[in-house]
Image (tube, rainbow, N blue to C red; front, side, top):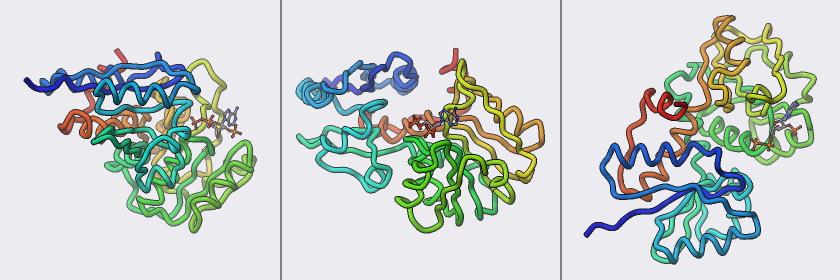
Length: 271
Ligand code: ATR
């Protein structure tokens, strides 16, 4: 009899995660005998929980806040992207080993790939937190020549620019509107615009109308930034696609099939 395959997402808190809905939808669609569950795990319990899941025969798991960095000291093998980003979001348990990878950069890149501007001279990233690190890695891979990071706390932007090296530069938050001049891509990785959070007020007058604008916030799906960008004629991509695409490599490793990605998934996730 075929094995019942198991994976899930470990976080604290984790109840808000859309990943169980996504993976279980794919399992059902593909007729795979498996399940994907949300597991609330306090930070100090991460290591023993992972051990328990391995003992119970799980195939692996995703990690979300606050476990992504801590997993670096737990995985036996860490892929290059996860090392570069300094965070792991996907673990695969195989032959007694724990493999760590980071699929957030892949998810970001896949989400904007179809819409990418032909010119990849300049990208502007707002924010320098965990999500920004994955975006930096993706934009570097996508071949952007100049990647400008601006953050409310400038030191974090500087640290990130230094970490990623050639092509990256940090700027004070006060310069964010001026920085948009000549940009081919604008990415918001801050929590500004999040439902119920602080409003996002950015004057985009300097941004070329050909520039692609994307937001990693997906609640609401169409953020105030995306609304403002569309209104002035810029192409836009919402952040939910990143969540969907980042899930593909994990699903493939745990459940042994490539899940289909299409626009209908968004409605399913938000219903
Ligand atoms: P994540 O892992 O989602 O990136 P994070 O590490 O907490 O989360 O980062 C949140 C980002 O939103 C940071 O860039 C943060 O700026 P600071 O580094 O200055 O904290 C940014 N952010 C949050 N609230 C903000 C606000 N009111 N104005 C500007 N930036 C804000």
